[in-house]
Length: 210
Image 1 (cartoon, rainbow, N blue to C red):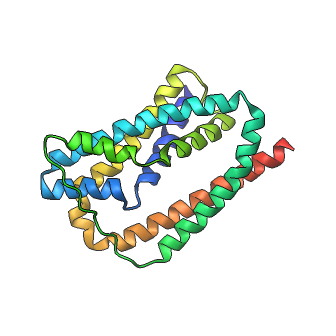
Image 2 (cartoon, rainbow, N blue to C red):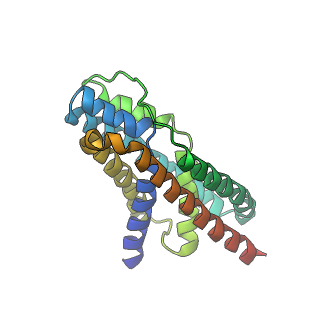
């Protein structure tokens, strides 16, 4: 039972941090709230979170396949080192920039806010590799097993972590809009640190396999 609590909070935190930097999804959640109403913003966020949970489920089964093919995992871990290093540099450079993030104009009606959220979330192709990587890391740490309850907790935490950030954007972005640059800068620094941490863990795992 203890590993389920760790699994939930680790996955929730990872999903939360991945959604924090201003981007297409969270800024459109805020835009929907401002132009329509907060209920529409919440509905939009639910649409996004639904797709995130579906993508996280797919990621689990990909991780399960990789777990049964250790030779593939070894190669992927080597690739992951380069990916995490590149992402760490990317987020660090993004944090250094002082460019104001603009909300992209996307029309969202009250009737299709949920579907719009699902559609925009589907366009994010990095979600599945991200959660596949997390799943592999959690499995190696003993935090997740490929059993129904573990998978359900992982998927639920991913959805709730994403929804929590979108909810904050819906209700508080108008009050924090003038602080967006500093908020984005700090969030990118935190993500850069997270990528470095994952890089170190991955390097250790590669060395242990040799």
